[in-house]
Image (cartoon, rainbow, N blue to C red):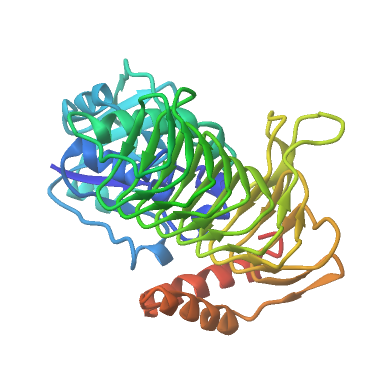
Length: 393
């Protein structure tokens, strides 16, 4: 069977994070949504996404295809239901299409959701990511589910010397290093990825995931549910944060109830407000609505798109959204919405030329011995074109 993961029509509610990736490549829990599906399906998937992203995330078509909603987190029961679908059948939950089985000809002619499908109502309960803030608010459930899958039937490595380990739900992959830390898994499982490092003096409460080659620096305080994606560094205080990967919050400062994309850097003593002084629910910028909308959450901090950065002592207000490739600095609280490709702060912003953004991205990639190739350049240029056409992006 050929499996294709498609972007749900509400993908814009997940901007700015989906400017640079399909919905399925969002990290929530320990792994990305795509990695979860590929674990259950036992094979690789391809993507049906925006045209400018399709060069990096190409679609693979076959005579017989199952299309899967990339905003939905899988489970075993759901996968069994999907694999029982016949051609021209769709697995649904109310008005939500979970998956559909279609021929190559139907796939070629499809615009939006195909009609004429026999709908089968799922019997599965599942998690679905509809809005950017749900990435951190659902992260605890996602970590627990991933932890059970990844660790089932496997033996953990032993922690290093001088640690205080509280509880039994901790799994350490090969090559990981933990020295002089306090880790409490009674509040949720703790997963330490391959070749990751937790330095001395760190205090961590689960649920927590530290992915491969990432580092928790000395004296960090981390409250779950928090995920630190691969090749990242964190320090200071974190509470219910999801970092996708290749990003750094390496110094003191507070980051709470937030989502940070890839290739971001938060300067020393960056602080994020996650609670309003009047204890009201937090409103956040909605790209599709072009206005601030109510999250229904009392705690909500920062949503930051890929390649964005901030200087030392930056102060982010409650419910702030920063787009792609923006650079934020200066004293005082920043605006609650900073569009993509902006350079500045409380004294005003200037346009950040895409050529300079590409130059910086190339340097950042080179520091990790990676190539910022033509495909990556074209994605940034496409995002710049999109945001130039709409100044609210």
